[in-house]
Length: 121
Image (tube, rainbow, N blue to C red):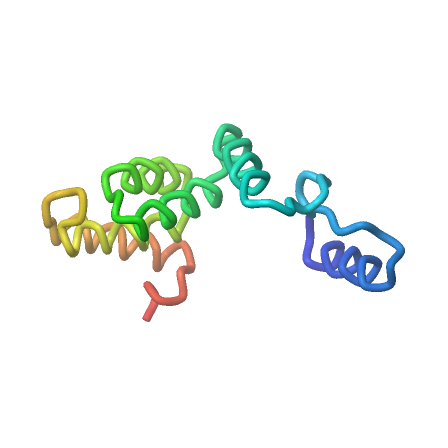
């Protein structure tokens, strides 16, 4: 949905005329961690690259770099700039993969082309 529609919904929620729901799936916002994980799995199964990147980031922060790599690779294959940015870090530091400066630069360039603000710097 466009930013205007999202903003209009937020105004209706603030006025109490509308229950807070996800702008994309129209489901109520998850209230527990378990519900959040359920919705994230659902989005990943639907090939949502943003959900895949988010899962990859969560796994990266836990130190599970090989699993994070899997999610980042799939999301990057779907054109997600955030996933390309995180892949550049994995290849730069050799986390879950061998260090590879060519792949690091490739993914950093793809992230920049995709509009990632830090990669563009």
